[in-house]
Image 1: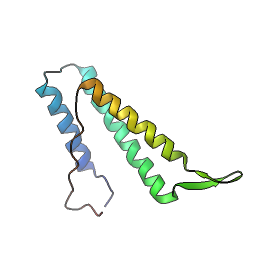
Image 2 (image 1 turned 180 degrees about the horizontal axis):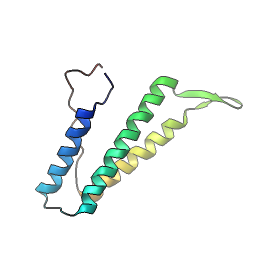
Image 3 (image 1 turned 30 degrees about the vertical axis):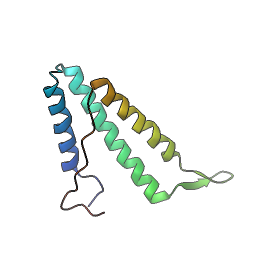
Length: 102
């Protein structure tokens, strides 16, 4: 199965929303920011998959070059951390699904 499942995404969403609730942080814009975080989480996983598939070097016009997904992954992670920081939340610890293959 994929590295990160829909069930894991749902757990992260539930955890972040619970943290908002515990901190009495309300408002649709905060829930929207959690959704932005989850969208970036999806992008992050696609970038990781690309790096695993293509490697850290890809063919370029003048020979091998760094896979652009590496730089994009760093930027995506930074943005995810900014969202969590602005909301005063913490990333939930990853849990291994019984059906995940590592």
